[in-house]
Amino acid sequence: MRGILVEEGVYGLTFVSDTTSPPHWWGSILAGLVLLGVVASTRPSQARPIGLALGFTALVAGAFVDVYSQDLIAVVG
Image: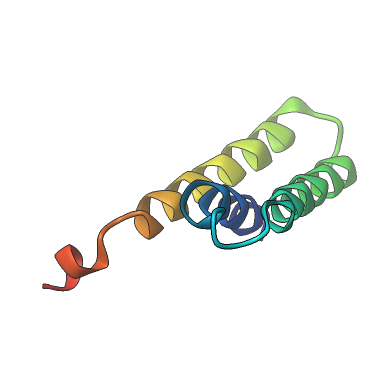
């Protein structure tokens, strides 16, 4: 969920911010980062679980932005 929220915000700011409200997209990014902070704070204070949460969030966000930014006509046709 963290990665999807961050990704939606990045995608919105990158591709559709001129037709929608940018504060909405910043809110999505902030919600994803807050959720990441909550998850990180409930884990033991070891670097590995927090690093994995950060890495997984970045991986999911990057993958979704990459997929959503593809030209769907080229993919389908």
